[in-house]
Length: 161
Image (cartoon, rainbow, N blue to C red; front, top):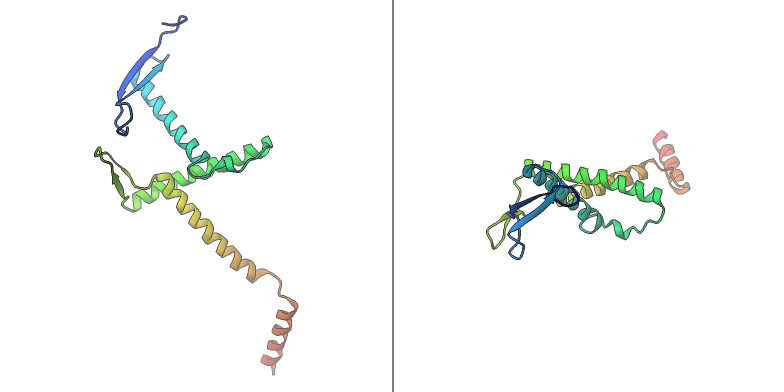
């Protein structure tokens, strides 16, 4: 008890750790139930993974270098939605295609390509396909040049003869 607050210490085996990691995870909380504390940590870890993807392992938000708060908030909103789309798309891909696994020296198996990365690549491909489609559509919809108009007019006269 510190300052009239009772703390609970939870020690859990680190099943996902690498060889140099501590074999145990330690949690200290003012919550009473150890299972609840561990669930909260798992949620927090998912948030940490999200920030890693936003900052350096995907979207590289720090490279954008925005200074205006409104623009930063808008960009964070767009990236948060895109992140959720990437996770959802990656999960769908893993359900529809057998995911490749990677086995480490300590015999732990993990996905060779993370769910985020798989979804991120799918969204990138969709954007590239969309860009190509929109470029083609734009070229069909843009007004013809004077030269193209003369060609069209000449072809129309030829067909009417």
